[in-house]
Image 1 (tube, rainbow, N blue to C red):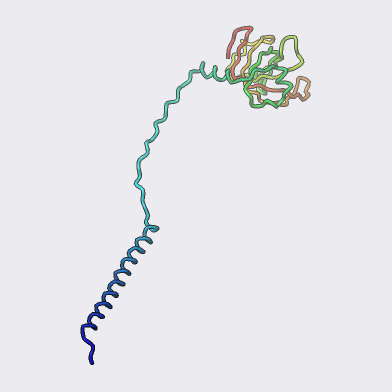
Image 2: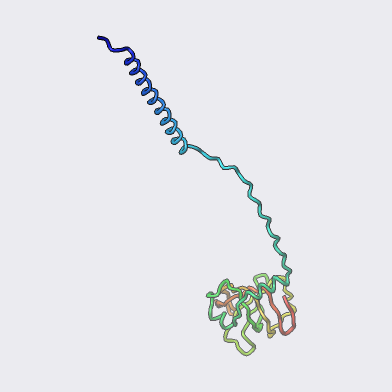
Length: 186
């Protein structure tokens, strides 16, 4: 006896259906796998957004009087005795003090470049040297004048005294000076 032919046909459709389903499933899984692998390799290029350029605020121009006032306000009040005692400990500091001119010091070309100063006419225990600024009218200064000094502590330096010996003294580079005796300012 022969099996009915319909049965074979229906098996064939079942097998074709299973194969088709497997193919569809493979395509779906493959597309998901491709999508998943592309997400890690995707390069996002950001669009450049122009950043605003900050406009610099104008720097106020200070007058010479304002610059002088700022400098003087930033100094530390001290004395000739403290400067002499501290030696180079305060080197680089901006200082203010009052002193009396003892005598003037000339440089190697004979120009008056500095003055030895003391705390007062009656106190010669401490002597330091003030380096006078260029352009100062030396004719307006005299030994014995009391002067206010605003300047920078240059530390200790060595030099020769009148007898050829070596001396060490503290030097102050004068930035501003007022002669209280003659009212001369520089």
